[in-house]
Length: 351
Length: 262
Image: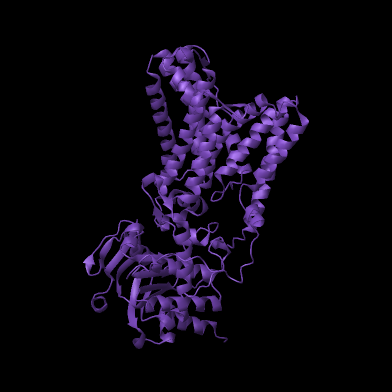
């Protein structure tokens, strides 16, 4: 039996039963459109309501906040499209920074070696999360909740044990710190804005993640695994490898954010990243990811983080009580979930 | 094709499967060749699914022999069976409802260009092939970009069959393809089964409905409680006999008496 091939794939002929979808309507069906509209609205609001928001220093501040959350949110979005959660992602940003700090300031290890070692440890933890989920079928919510508490405990207890304090300081004295700062902690002036380098990491990672999702086989596999795991297995998708890879992806993103904050301030608090794991998930959901998996976008997650960054700093500029942030966040999450639900209904998936 | 008619593509001899202490299937022999439709019939729990899973490479058999082109074979996974040209269309069709038709069509066997991590999907080509292949099966689709979940049951079934044929299947195993469908949709699917047969494929049609099996089947393997009740040529059995055999013959007669109004 021969494979029937199509030489020179002809363009699909127009079909009279297919109502021409207006490009605008097609755009409105994208998962990230809700986040885009919300981001614009919030941007306009704070620009009008506060004078600091649009100032070069102000804009650089909220872009920096958004970038750190954005890198994590994009990695978490990929994992969520694959149908899983990672609650250890926030603590991982602390763990990796603390590891590099301890290795270099306490034991005099070479900075680059310490960073590589921290990355390997992060990837191992990610692989462990993935392996446990894939092998046992225990929900990732529980598995990573366990890893989250383990990392949180290790971060605090380990830091106290090694330094006697709850933070690691003195990174600036480590040989090679200045070179590392160029890659992870520098400031690049663009059109009058002094942008932190993390903003470019954020944009780069969002672009790569979008490419992976929409234009590579891995992307197809991620959508399939999250959408219908059994179908992915039956069609021969390397399900285990892909899922473990996604957990390693969030761990690697945790390492990157850990490095970005380490080189930015040269100190690491033992509590870094704790409590942020849900913010990444919220950013991804606001950006159009379904909590049930199988649907979402990396650009959406990046926009979700942009919204969070703008609100986080906008509230400060507007001199409101900072506690409004949480209420705002919760309301936005519910709104996003409702919008996503209607999107899925509109896709008209018959059971 | 002349050699293929003498040596069946897929054959099992005295095959059996034990799950722990449960004997799900024992001592079943049958075969399917090119351009042939083998119907596997049986009531719930007869062992149809177990036989299907062995043929599809999902579960290894515990006893007996599986022959591929006359050679002994022991599948270690679905991928191996797929590579050997044994494609299975499961009841759930192995599709992902939220994904576009073309992404579903190529799921697990995506066309890509470039090397390793930098390879990219050949999107336009996959769209065009999907449209063309579905057209060949007589499925006239409006838009290959619509989520596959928006298609009707019969259309989804047909997409799954078309996919199996395109990817070089020599044997297509269909798991209850008509059970969830209405009368008209079931007829549509039976037409695709006949079309697959006419393309020279071997078809294994697993069903509990003799009325769907009889019109397209060449041979009928009837299972009951994990064992074979025999294999019949179409010339050797009438549809009412087939139905009676499936329902357990004598049991049905006694039931009929019981239900009669005294």
